[in-house]
Image (cartoon, rainbow, N blue to C red; front, side):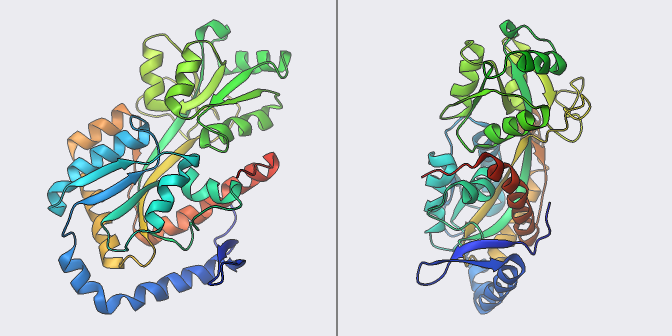
Length: 343
C-alpha cells in the first residue's frame, strides 16, 4: 500500500477534473469540520428528529444487506428513531451511492459503502456521478467479509492444488463467475489468475445470488463468494470450498485453510461501513459511530455476524477516511493491469 499522501481526482467548482494530494484534502476536511462547530451543539441536540434512511446499493438478501439490517434494528433503541433500509442496486453500487451524495447533510440519510462504491468505482468509471473523497463524510467501518474460493463438485477437484493443476492444463476453458465487472469478486479472481499464471473465462452476473446459483447449476466452474453464504451451500454438498481469502482462518470455517497457507496468498474479501453526505457535522457522525460500536456488542447482532462470517470492526470517522484512501490505492494496481474502464 502507498502512503496517504497519494493523489486523488475530484471536480473543482467549474466541474473540471483536477488532482490534489490526499493530505491536502484531509486538511480541508478538518477545516470543513471546524466550520460547522458553531452549529455542532444544536445539530447534535436535534439529531435524530426523524427516521434514518440507510441506502444499501445492492439487492436485498446479500451479505451487506443482512448485516446492515441487523445493525439497523439494533440502532433504533439508542437513537430513538427507526432506521429504514432502502435497496438501490445498480452500476456496482454507484446508483444508490450517488443518491446519498446529493442528500441533505443532517445524518438522516446514510450510505452503506464498501470497497466497490468508494475504492474501486472511482478507478473504473471515468464519469462517476460522485467523488468518494469529497462528496461524503465517513462515519464508521463496522465489518469485514472474507471470501472463500468455491467450485462445483462435478468439476472434479477437492483442493486448491487440484484446481490450479486443472486450470493450467485447460487454459482459457475454465469459467469463473462474479457479481459484476469490476466487483470485488471479479478482481479477487483476477488476482489469483495473475499470481498462478492462469487463463480463465470471466462470466459476470448481476449479483452474488445469481452467480452462486449458476455455480451450483454447473453453468460455471469456480468463483469467490462471501464465506457465510458459501458455508451454507457447502454444508448441503452443493459446492466445495477450496480456501479462505483472509489473513487467518475464520471462526465459521476453522478447518478450512487460508489461501496463503496453501501457497497462494490472495487477499479476497470486502469491507462495509457507513458514510453520510459531505458537510455532515462531525458530532453527528461521531454519535452514529458510537451507536454502531455499541450495538455490535449485542448478542443478537453478534449471532447474525457469526452466521454470515462477517468480522466486526469499529472505527472513528477519520480512521475510516484514511482506511478508504489506502484501500483505493491497493486496488489501483489490479485495475490498471486489467485496464478496466466502464461507462
